[in-house]
Length: 506
Image (cartoon, rainbow, N blue to C red; front, side, top):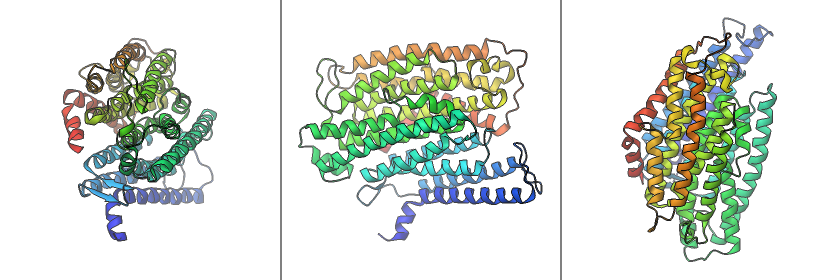
């Protein structure tokens, strides 16, 4: 294979990288132009030759969004199947589908981020989102340990910067430091675990690892490698007890950064985790049944799932800040999503992918509402949502759709996502082995309905104080949130439009 063929197959990633460089260049020239005319820079206007700060931000957002759209079109034009360098880059219907999903989540994040007033240098911010998206795309399409680790690190470094982008705010810097320290330790565990697996299997290709481990019984060194690898990925998906970074990061980061961490990062992490567990470790499945547990990775994942459901839902009950509430909710949803991986097989993995996609779209929309509320009121506590239905009916209605979907109420997408996920878990095995975990998940869903209704009570029932403000959200932001709410409703009414596409991609 020559370099031209390689560039053609890696065209989506190359397009996003070029878009990031162009956005950086645009921001550099815009900053120089403004600085050359005036030293005084305000948050509302960068003076000089009629060059507003908002115009520069809009131009950067437009260029970034255009690059993502062109990259998505390039994904569609890729061949159906191709394998580069023994699994480093694998083109398949499933990988292409989730590359498009990741690009779409980044696209909506860019649109929402342009409305955020919390920081300057938005060109750099958009460029880092694009670079993080490249890392997520590498994660989605790779089936080789070295490339998976490179994708994890590229994504992680970008997300650390996005978390601490509000340098003037102490909570943002603190959140970024905690995220970085936890992430560095998780990366060390992941790399150590992958090195042990490579030492035993003698290869870094997931398919080759599966073939080598098929005839090997679980020994202490192999078990240590699996556990260390799972610890690293448990951090990435914010599964308990490796979730302690999430509440501070979600609350301290810029809202759009938190939205991207909770949506795009989660989708790519579950895709690659499913590939590792169900491909490379397929022969080490074990059994997580309540009556016949057997050594393997499923009992470990089952414990992570149970802890995430319990800790996430119970901790969310005590939260007064909506972003921290959504963070602990994300911990619980990570526990739900792991059910599909424990169930295994085509139905279990497709249920995980279906649910994590619906969850990402829903949470991105919920964070979009939080972003606009914070921009207009200066905060994102429950008190800031009081009387939202009177001040911004569209945002209040959209928030109701998002939260009720997260709670799993019909006819919204979250209901069918949980139904398919729980059905796959119940039907796994011959004697309903995972019924205990499904019952725990149903109990967690019941708890979650309470704290989601607390937010809706503040939104629709409580009255705003006398200083309540009128919302002036721009049209594009409101349109984006309304579109995401409509998507949640659409996938709830017609779930097969996405689920069938996922199933046909296997």
